[in-house]
Image (cartoon, rainbow, N blue to C red):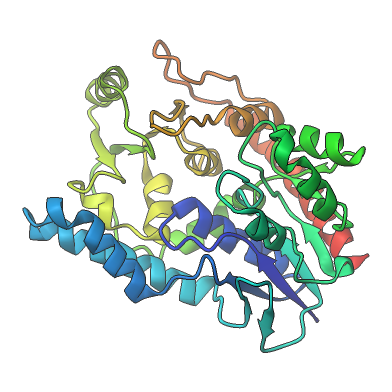
Amino acid sequence: MKNIAILTINDNTNYGNRLQNYALSQLLSQFGNVTTILMSNHARTHERAIVKQIAKTMPRVMKTRRQAAAELMRNKRFYQFTNRYVPDNTVRISKDGTTHTKKRIDRVVIGSDQVWNYLWFSPSELKLMMGSSFPAHELLSYAASFGVDHLDDGVKSLFKQYLSRIPHLSVREEAAVGIIEGLLGEKPQLVLDPTLAIDSAQWAQLARRSAITPEKPYVLTYFLGTPTQEQNSYIHAYAKKHGLEVRAINNPKDASYSSGPIEFVRLFQDASYVFTDSFHACCFSVIFNKGFQVFNRNSKIKKTLNSRMETLFSELQIENTMNRLDVYPFPDYAAVDTRLQQLREDSITWLKNALAS
């Protein structure tokens, strides 16, 4: 069997990142032995993550031991998830681009997530995220994302030089299709995010291992920004009307805050309704056939979900109700699931052919 290495962002604090890494590993495992590359500039250990989190939260968690314990448990669950499901101890790339590997690598799959977000990486790091440490014939991308709708002129030549080395390009958003077509003169393949490319039964199997099992029905919120007062009122009005609790994964005072990636999946599986500003939260809402509403992220960083969400809504033929406070959307999942299954088959077929060529 082929030895396949995933080149992605190593973020041991982000649910979407860990779960897309897991999902892509699952997809690729039918074609070979899979590992995830550890990037030295992303490198994290359990101890380092805990120290960093304690330093960041100490002023506020000193008031409550419960919150401090939740922070530590959350980090522990992330670390355990990575070690068990997406181990990254076989291949490492140093900051200078040197590759250290314990076995031969046949193919390198770049993605998913925002691996080409030039606002996050230096030029030297971007080169590495485009596979500069590996021979061109080993490379392909799966559901890669730029995280932006357009590129500044200053980075276009860099992207053109290194993306042109990748024989098989696939991306996650329509905006990325346009970016690459503008750079290279050819369209990459549009494919599903890996989390959507495996079905609900596989996710439910993982969720059974959750250490958190909610007892009362609830509305689930997952915000990476800060919801506005108007949005909070809208959420609580829905919960009150339907007799539901409100569970907030990213609220340190909430019982859900200690969740690792597995608990995150379980919380979506059992939710009655979802409110979010997260792309992957929308993905899991779709996977488990939940009604959901998504808002643009309210944060100091000027960044929207528009490209990702517009592609998701368009591909699955879901009415775009982003940011509306006059409706509580619930997709027609009979139609959505049929469409999603076809997109899964198309995405996996593309991946299979790219790996075989």
